[in-house]
Structure formats: structure tokens, C-alpha cells
Amino acid sequence: MSDTSADDLADIAGLGYERARDELANVVKMLEQGGMDLDDALALWERGEALADRCEEHLAGARQRVEKALAESADAD
Image: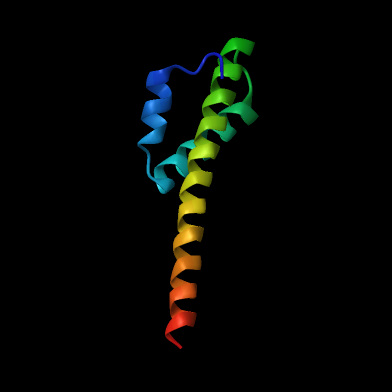
């Protein structure tokens, strides 16, 4: 991510799942519309990649919590 600054990444790291997902959807919409120069499109793409990674982090954490709860439930039976 060459054009994504450390401040941008820190901002993304603090986003909750819904906010990151909504912003990612907006990034996709803007990229699909086109009409921007290559540098802007690449910077937006990089932000989208970072947002997608953040969403995946949230989903992985949720998946782990569900698996733990299921394992604890099975142990209690």
C-alpha cells in the first residue's frame, strides 16, 4: 500500500465492522463509477483493500467467539 498513509491505516484500524463495511461499499461504488485519475483510483483501491482486511479481522474474531461458545456448550452437555 504505497499511497495509504499510516494515519489512514490507524483510522481504519479503529473502525467497527459496520462502519468499515459501509465505507468499503462506498469505495467500490466510487471505483465502479470511474472518472477519476489513475493516482486517485489507486489510492482509493488501497483504502478499499485496507477496509476489506479490517472487515475480515472482525469476521475472524466473531467466528472464533462462536466456535468457542459452541465448544463450551458441547463440553457442558
